[in-house]
Image (cartoon, rainbow, N blue to C red; front, side):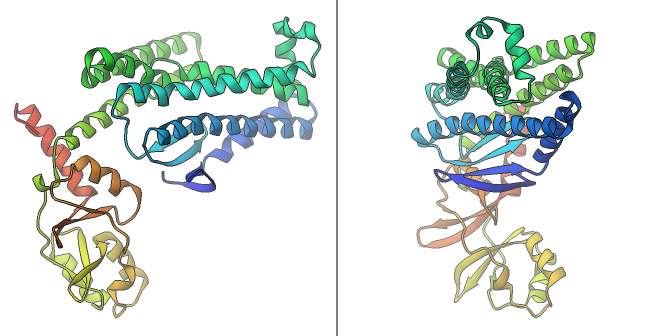
Length: 373
């Protein structure tokens, strides 16, 4: 994800923090200093509260990720955003039962954290407070160790319940889709779940406008946009799943020897319609260079610099019979965002992100015209 930076790696999963995430910490410090009277104490309590809450969010997302790994799905990263966490899976689960397991384990983990915190809290609170919601909420607003425990316990319960809302991109929307898919198939299930999510979001937005709740309106917008995006993403995956590399492969016309000067390569690229160029050594493909990378290099290096210096030498390789969905997953992960196609021992072409996007648009056009993808 753009504007995110790795802060840790757990079980091979990159934990990333989005550039905008510190804004929520600063806001929590501001609110804490304003609410609790003692400026520095309140600010530290606000920062500790939101930071520990996002540790709980990481555990929530890790539960999703570890369940996905157990089912054979690779997880690229977990990214912390101001609105929560996002697990980036390399592919979607194929079976509805697998999606159900991956989706439900997150909210269950949040509830488990809340139960553990409740147990710890019992050691520090008077027993009569446990039965008095007013005292409990007051404790959550007190800048103290007990206040922090109560806040985190209630926040994890809220996190679990919020994620169980039956609408994308919430876990509840995926749980609903997986249950529906068991009865009516994945395509109809997605349509029904998306429509329900959008209707729910519209209702939440209307209520938010009526009661003057900006937060509720923003949540409704987030859910509505997520439901629409999920529907489009699923449609793209289904299109690519039905097509193979051979359906869109165009043989490579232009290659660059690795000792070609940068200036000469740039002139050739400007006259070519290719976007990705194989870089060769002794006639063998050793790298891939995108036209934009070539243009960027030309702005920063002298024209006599050899083009092999800028080639991406680690690239995925596929057979012409491979599914475009498999290629799509591979080219999203790392530069050069393209895959080399090899028939037997001979490289015959390159497929990049632009080629895949054109394939999706072409398939969508054919479907509207009543044809097949």
